[in-house]
Image 1 (cartoon, rainbow, N blue to C red):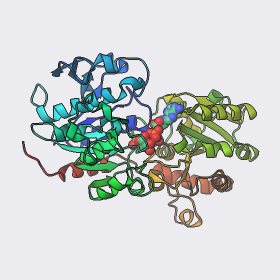
Image 2 (cartoon, helix red, strand yellow):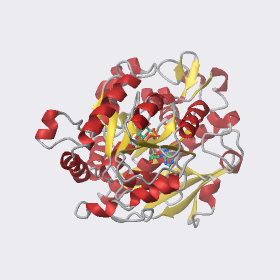
Image 3 (tube, helix red, strand yellow):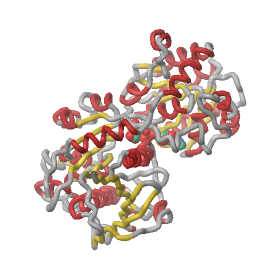
Image 4 (cartoon, protein in one colour):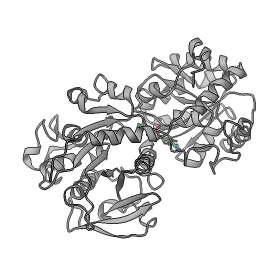
Length: 477
Ligand code: ADP
Ligand code: GLC
């Protein structure tokens, strides 16, 4: 089966969060199972110098008001790429979601290019059976397939985060190369706007999201306005959990770590702790329970609950390290917390891939107190690296952590800690449970081992996606 992935991020070339990680791992896992998966990505500046161009798949004299565009062929390690080369839209410094003035048009261009490959194929005659788009930037792709001519490939939309929907004024309909009849509740319209994600969710053949619990939540109260549509399409929606890319996230061979380790050599984890404490400006305290958070600072991530507990953590003898960037108010509040507790609370405001790896290898506890979390990867990385995740019971966090209780400790299934209510008090109560277990090293090691032994491989999820593609009825040529 031939499949074209389309997304705005791909690690290590462009990543703002978990989407980039998943885009790097999932198509390769499907290729390992024999599927012919290729990937369409815009040519950002970080991409241009990275690849040898192997040929031109298509030339588009004008695309979405951004001038001429080409679709080029290239090869990332183990993953054939199509690159949408449209300098006016993509060859600019900054992050992938900067430049609001043409945000809609440039991701419409990406979606249109994908639909073009789906309908016409490339210059060598490769044409995908299925187009698989990820998140709102690709939401118009099923619309271009539905409203265009020619053969229709199957379409799949995956929701990595329903909070981001891509809403734009109705007056842009023509700019986005959409016909007038697309502007209905059955098409791209959402409350009198054009909504990219809604269009994809309405028009794609199959829908997925990144955990079973989130799949239920977004049909109920957690759908950010799209719950009705999703409940209506319930039969076409599946929750498939993300995995961990063991080539990138593996403490036994992680080049970012001072000392590599695995289940058989847990003591080799220790040297990473003073190394990380030094880098962060924390006291090299070998006794203190070390809590860490590696996160976008976004209200849905619930880091304000951690801010509520800074004094509680410090007065309990713990240390706290936060790596994050985003909301300026939260950044400032964490900076102030670090100033109030020098050596005990440390904050890195920014994005640093290597430091994130070191944090997972050094921390005792990784905090993920999200209000909503479609899947979440840091609680998985924590387990793989021998840190215990402390998570709120929501979305993929509920599906991937077994909270310590007298029962789960007794039957050796616990892999972390869980709390329910999104309040500082509830997190504080969970922190007390963490500290109690920390005083029992044998019980702590048991939970740590169970987490490190859990299989978060991509093979199962990759099979689930391939089964899903196979369930799409063929629409013929
Ligand atoms: P989301 O995609 O919602 O941000 P995930 O948990 O799925 O959440 O993925 C977050 C990814 O971003 C992980 O790979 C995590 O290590 C990384 N990350 C988040 N913040 C930072 C940071 N400040 N520095 C380095 N990596 C970070
Ligand atoms: C999104 C979600 C996160 C998920 C990631 C990868 O960014 O916020 O929960 O892990 O996508 O699917």
